[in-house]
Image 1 (cartoon, rainbow, N blue to C red):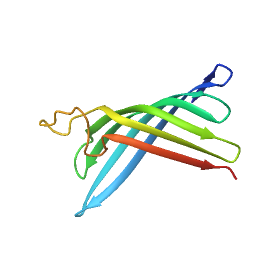
Image 2: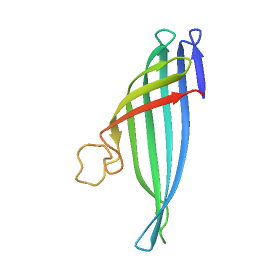
Image 3: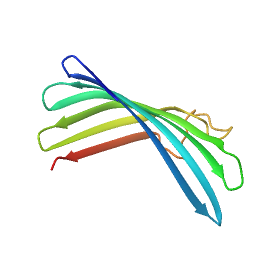
Image 4: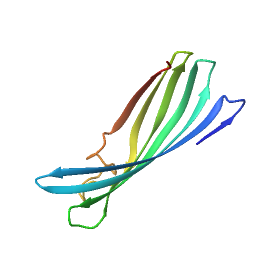
Length: 130
């Protein structure tokens, strides 16, 4: 979903992702379903350069073989973004630290989930039009 304002210079973008996976180890199968909601605000500085703020919320449930579905973790990332676009290609770089998440166990004091994700999510997306 996208909403534009200020003659298209300001954009608010939202994506919803659903990921399902199955893993097998030692004859046991485990199923996982992850939902991810991404949102960002983008402002065009000129025809080519834009800056913004992006974030995503991640929520995962698991079903070990022979067991019921159970909550695994959630986490929240947010940070700045910068991008460049021209007629042939575009690139966007985001740097999002994990600002909150479910604790991995009772001894974790960070309030972040670091078993499946890193402390900082850096992403570079490059697109070429052909």
